[in-house]
Length: 78
Ligand SMILES: [Zn+2]
Image: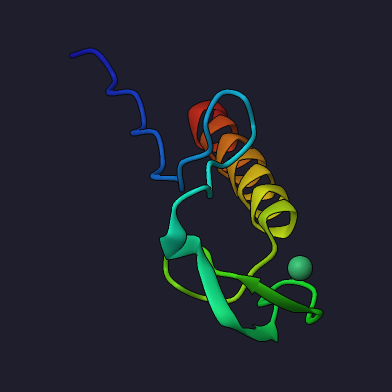
């Protein structure tokens, strides 16, 4: 029986461009709050409505994708 390939882990979505589209007003708040990643104030909100700079969120998603790819590769080779 052929061995099943491990399923690719779920990951947050980052477009192929590597840049998020936060032009929607849902990503903006009039109240500055500390960014969930770097702690500096921002009016921007991520898709979960948490305060976050766009560049911080993009970097976090890149890191998540890299970690997921690494975990996937490790599982594949195990
Ligand atoms: Zn930030």
